[in-house]
Image 1 (cartoon, rainbow, N blue to C red):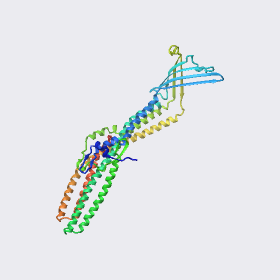
Image 2 (tube, rainbow, N blue to C red):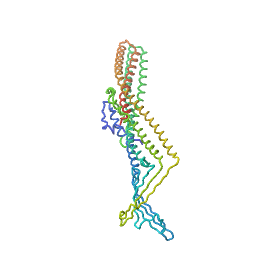
Image 3 (cartoon, rainbow, N blue to C red):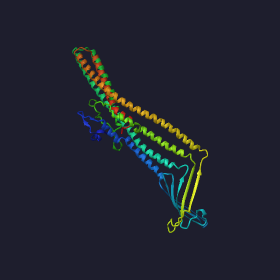
Image 4 (tube, helix red, strand yellow):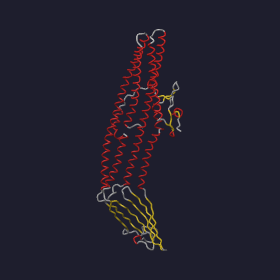
Length: 466
């Protein structure tokens, strides 16, 4: 059963939450993001990408492990020992395609094949096997290791990419919560104001200062504000549910947001002016962005496959040489002579080479497609980064405008209210001024949220969130 824990019970000291007079606690953006980075399952998954890359590299290195092996073949029939053939050897593959081998052979028997004959003390051998055609510059084993190294490097980039997306989505959820909460506060104040005016109009009607018709209009305004408040409450609750998706404790325990937790108040946050330092980061976008680097590693991976397929166009020509020596008193070098050896060569070549040519041509087409995709992705990343810069600058300028607009509307509301109290204005005009004032406040909250989110958007576009 899913365990639901209140955030402040487990993580209150960690957050350094600030208590309010109404028992509410402020969950700041930085505190929230610290929890996401530390405990979210996707953050743990990002760490697994690095471990996966290291494991894949270890597996590929196994292709160059020395191999110790032995064979024993014996035949007994009709009371006779036909043959006894034993061979123990050590094979050492190398990065250059050459394989070093050394071993010991011992044979005996009444009907032993003459070519398998060895001296009474057996026969030591040591030599090499060299591919002179296909496999000289690269083979499957070396290709696997090259690709494993590329994959290991790309796993670090993949870790950055996953964290970049996680932090971005979590950050958007926080700012949506910030926006919904502050709008809810505006509509709460608006409802209280409408209710207070409705009660005042009722009293004025009783004393004959206002027409009874005004109570109907004032009541409609209360109903409208109640509807707006309910709508904003739903949006606030939905934003809280989304925020809880990113809240986890250790050992993968999901958390729910404490109902008393609130985001930073809009009145305590100043808009962020654009940081010119981010323009310099645009210069390293192509060489640092995880999406671009990740796709470049895919191309490098495919290029190794292309090189291997090009190598497969060559004929297979392998040369093997072993020096032989009879051990005397256990010393294999006592009777060593350069005239004792065996060697061999093997040649194979498909006449039409259609499979290798087809695979090579297919690789070439795929590489060209991937390079075209990379060019497009690079342009798209640059576009999104420039768009984020423009958005940051614009939202900062908009906030300065909206701040003045809200102040001016507030003055209009107060002035119109004064005129209404003196009997020189109508309830319709007062409500009209208030509606414009409320609309300006919500637009200011939208602009502030977008401004605060602009830094997050730009860092995500640059691929540096982690």
